[in-house]
Image 1 (tube, rainbow, N blue to C red):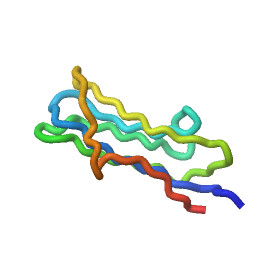
Image 2: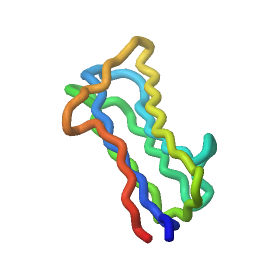
Image 3: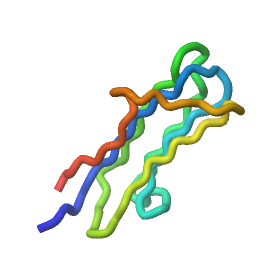
Image 4: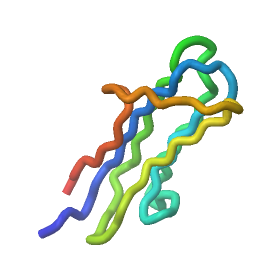
Length: 95
């Protein structure tokens, strides 16, 4: 049989900037998760990079489901994401 339950996780590290907010929003099939929203909203770190993580609860899936991890920030300027071992998006098969 196929996969029926998964857990989604994301980690993100924005480069240094002390203004605004940083958001991770994991969505299923283009909408907020109905089994429990995977949404994290942080204020920017006062110094250094803003590092954040988000995880979903165990969610039910069927063939054709897809997932997207959106990253938003409101510093008022373009910010880079640190592409290292602190920035990733993953899916864990539960059942």
